[in-house]
Amino acid sequence: MTANFPRPTSRITCAGALLATKRGPLPALGDSVSLRATRGNSLAISRPTLGIDRPGPATMPVCVSELRYVGHADLMKDLDNFTAALAGVNVVGAYLPANTPGTIEHWMLNEYYKSDEAFVFAIADAMHEEYQAIVDAGFLLQIDDPDLPDGWNCLPDISLSEYRKYATMRVDALNHALKGIPREKVRLHVCWGSHHGPHHDDIPLKDIIDLIFRVNAGSFSIEASNPCHEHEWTVFEEVKLPDGATLIPGVVGHCTDFIEHPDLVAERLVRYAHCSDVRGEPIHTRGVHGALS
Image 1 (tube, rainbow, N blue to C red):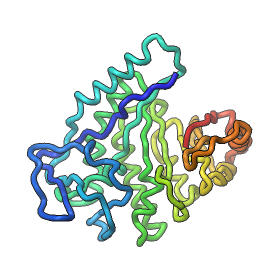
Image 2 (cartoon, rainbow, N blue to C red):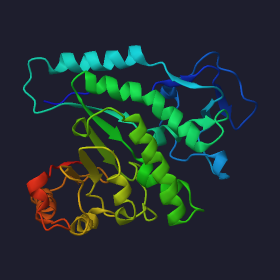
Image 3 (cartoon, rainbow, N blue to C red):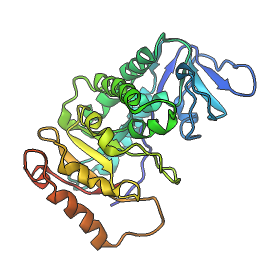
């Protein structure tokens, strides 16, 4: 059975949000503004606190006061809809996705908090309510974190060591948002963005895999079938999975309109199943599942 449900989106706001525009003054939007209307408009971002000037969305929300979560009604609608859809249906499990604080930061500028860290951790505090509600409703929480790999492409002027420091803080903020939620209730998904482009400047998996495994999650879904990253299955010949963790390589992709042959998908799965971590324990004994990249 397949069905389409509204994705639980980020529903945080501040008391006096503004809409930033590159074509004039900043008009006030009243007492609140939702990220829902602005997310996904562009892959390009602008982060003034990093001194980077690049094309970005024509409009972005701007945080000008303390952030708080205001999406309770919309979130409950998502949860109720999904619960109703699953009634009477035999499923192994069910999950709902939510974005990370670092990804949300892409789409909201900060003019209130004194540092990037304070801003991202404030987003984390707000998003904890959404994460906890998804788990309390009985669903697995999938944390979608395209920011972790593709933030590298948004920050072309920093070194790898600087980027790892940048990403580590945002992973720590995510773990802060996950406080009190059991690891086995959390699945992390990372990818290099779904845009159809050359991806030749993507950061290699080997440079961030330890940061991915730093997240307090019980399973890790990693894009694994596009031409720039399919070869990176070899990373798992050397890298140790966290104890008890499950690896979910994305063995079916969407980078072209070709439909992969089942034998190709099977080959991808077998590669991972035959990998061994640094202790020599086959990964397949600890769980490998296929997923869409």
